[in-house]
Length: 158
Ligand SMILES: [Zn+2]
Image (cartoon, rainbow, N blue to C red; front, top):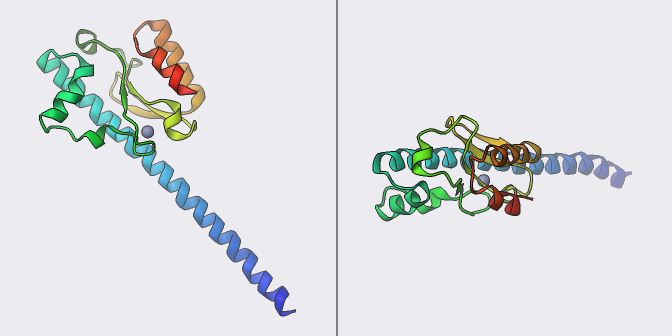
């Protein structure tokens, strides 16, 4: 009887602990996705401004900013994977004339365990896209010919 009563207490307690662990893990994931998107947006904005003002190719800007102490290397990393946020291969001349749907920066799907990935668009907003939406953006970028790095994305992306 006493054993049965203990079970009646322990089972709900176990469920509550598991639920709490799940909620904490999910909140951590959401926070990291958000931080990743914020870093991506900041990085893309800094690169765009510096490349336009100094007539430097975007893919050279991050290292220049880090070398000058204007950017911390860790702020260029996805907080979940610890891997670098990638810039789309858009030239400085083209950067001033991007469309809202052009991709400025991205990360492979593998960075967030295949659950989705952040993309920074030409209109300056970063969004965590589902794997299907992510692949759609890649397909669009390939068809629009606006993104020279599309090949890299698909090879790392799935
Ligand atoms: Zn990330």
